[in-house]
Amino acid sequence: MKFRIILLIISLNFVANASNIRVELYSNQNIQTIMINPMEGKYDFTTNKGDIYRIKKNNTIYITLTNDSINVWDINKNLGVFKWIEFKGVSKYNTFKIEPTYPILKPRYYEGDLKISSNNNCFFIENNVPVNSYLAGVVEAESGSKAPYEFYKAQAIISRTYLFDFINREGIDKYIITDDVNHQVYKGLELKNQLIKQAVTNTNNLVITDTSNELITAAFFSNSGGYTANSEDVWISKKSYLRSISDPFSLNQKNTYWKDSILISDWITFLQINNININTTDSSNLNNLYFTQEQRAKYYYYNNDSIPLKDIRKYFKLKSTWFSIKPKGNYLIIDGKGYGHAVGLSQEGAMQMAKQNYSFVDIINYYYKNVKIVNYNTIKK
Image 1 (cartoon, rainbow, N blue to C red):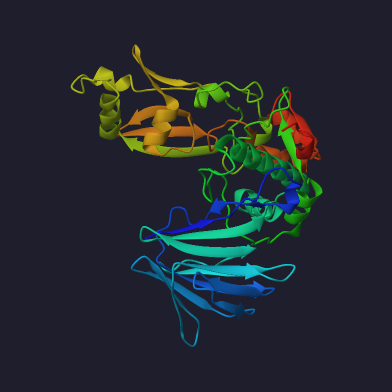
Image 2: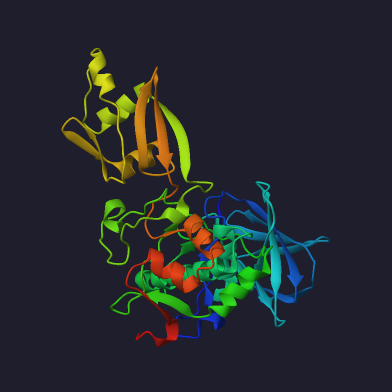
């Protein structure tokens, strides 16, 4: 049984800070029981049977799935079994806590309303949340609470652009945004640094467009290792604004360099899966396993055969595609640079730019080429 938590969207034809979006929470968790606590404001609790209860601050509601129905309890009694329930905020500002109890996970805090229904023996949970509240949570989850203010502004604009572009491409009635790395990491309202909320508010509605006035694919990652990658070297499509650039700002950072190791037997198995056969009885073949990247490359070469480096990274769960290989005993020693897909903005590099007094405009224009920062409402729909 799996909880699916969705943040609903009303429309994108609006002033962005007044609208809501839909995001799936706990997208990789198989949660079976959950507790809900209103933290700020007041909530009306309604059900498909027409019941209405007023839920006050810090009241606890226990919810579990029983035979494709929702079983609800408060601290004193069973409130009933329902097909759907809804927590509707009735104050100006409403927040609640979600705490999974099976499995036991840390509590998270969210803004807005909550609706829970059952579908094929799974919870389907919807949470209405304002765009800027969501973006503040994304910026914190993606970049931490100790970055410079100008970086937070750049990240807020990038995350907003990514969000609106994804919704536009998928369709307003079809999209589902998850809260993990498949889209943008989001863990609710922690906000240990209030500069994050200010950065989101002070860049309200700002997005990034290309020369055709279209929203860009606002890709970002942790660290480039000193050089970013072209979009077509990692994905299929070539984007004029996602070009490989020299990135000295990403040098000498936490994720600039990394090391790993792979059993030679595992490497040979991987090569064989990719139709590259090695005669392991000939030691000279093992010496040919050396591989060096002075600059970022797209393919690994063995004799006349090649494998996309992104496939190697995915198979062995490496931090990046920029690495060199040398055999040592029964292992291949991997010396790598950077962390992430390397397309677009390097977060650690952008943080260094902000520390060196570059503005959010400078940062965005450094990592994305020939782009404009505009108000979303000015884009022709």
